Length: 250
Ligand code: BTN
Image 1: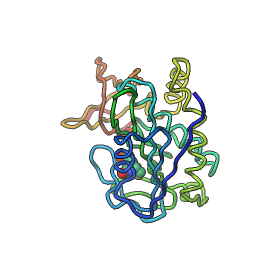
Image 2: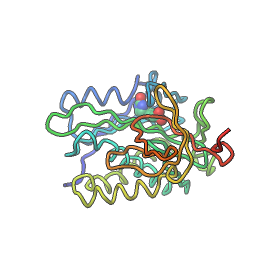
Image 3: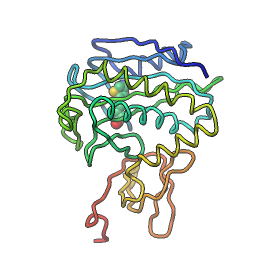
């Protein structure tokens, strides 16, 4: 595939960059459309949560990708962007976040970035909006253990500077989505960066929670958790990494 032509739209204030890019995607906007904002009045997180950040304190952006993939491969697209964001943070600040299943970037136990991917259409190709919020100088909401690039490194990165390098890193990985070999190496890089694997976890699902060993991620991006003797596949949920004493039966 030839290199992507990025078309970047900047907003001082918007409701949600994901919502804006999703609308443009439905109108037929090509891959490479990017929205970024200083402030979102209705920023959205996973599981219908709000995503709030003071003006200019985070990178708030959404990227339209149209890979030739089945909808059940959405997690691969998200992994591609998450790995690009991680590489960009390493380049600009030296902070090397790990990935936490499904879509968080964390430093230690603290969240530094989150991604929200939404499938807009599956007509000819998958149209996916991948939104990302990276805490640059603001340490995230009080109810989430979170941190920022500045808190971790002392480096102040501006949102446009991070976006520029993130898109550079994404361009370097985008072609991987188009071939079986590329997909395999993306999956490998994702699994290697995923600190969740091998840990005892509590997974909070919509109606219940399970505790077990996070064993692997399958080809659809589902987390496989060993609960007693059973392998449970988790598609949607919040993962808490447990410390040894938290994982013992009470
Ligand atoms: C999460 O961790 O819950 C995902 C958060 C994703 C937030 C970003 S900020 C830019 C983009 N626009 C949104 O409304 N959400 C995403």
